[in-house]
Length: 111
Length: 112
Image 1 (cartoon, each protein chain N blue to C red):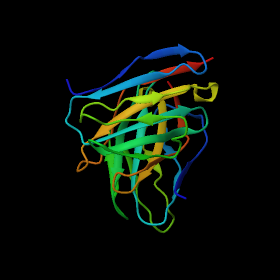
Image 2 (image 1 turned 30 degrees about the horizontal axis):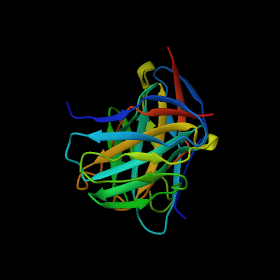
Image 3 (image 1 turned 180 degrees about the vertical axis):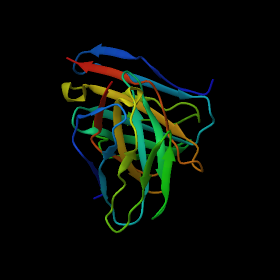
Image 4 (image 1 turned 135 degrees about the vertical axis):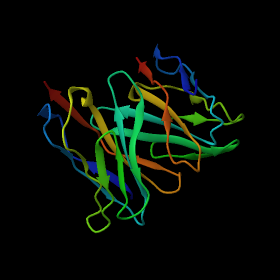
């Protein structure tokens, strides 16, 4: 069945470091792909999305490109800030039926 | 203010005592969904609804019921809670055409 796998955390970086969080998906077709962020004590917020192959989603300096060949949707940011510390979830969905989430990657950014 | 609300936010109960967690949204969203979040497992979808009177099972529906009698409300019912349903529960909603889910603040449930 469909699933999403993302790298285990926690990931600890110094401020201004480059961030990559890996995400791969398994699916029978071409789902929409999402990154959500969860700050402590809060619900999830959509960070970015891509709906078809080669689409690049971007928001707040974060980017992710839908790679059909490698079934991946890796999250990147060129220069992280302390305020980016949170848990990041990769997710997939077909036409708003079922959603599949990864296990989450906790990011700690140190000043 | 556009939002998804859940009640209660925290609940401690005992095995077998029926409970309902309410979810309400004020954005006229067609799509609503329930998730549970467990350490190391991420979010798993319990049930979802594409519109009033239309509901379907997610990945982990066992032990849960839902109803969608009104567009704004999507309650989650645990008829006979068990300790393995101790978890953090999130409700979410979305306009179907916009493909973005708005999440509630979460309900932390403990079943003793």
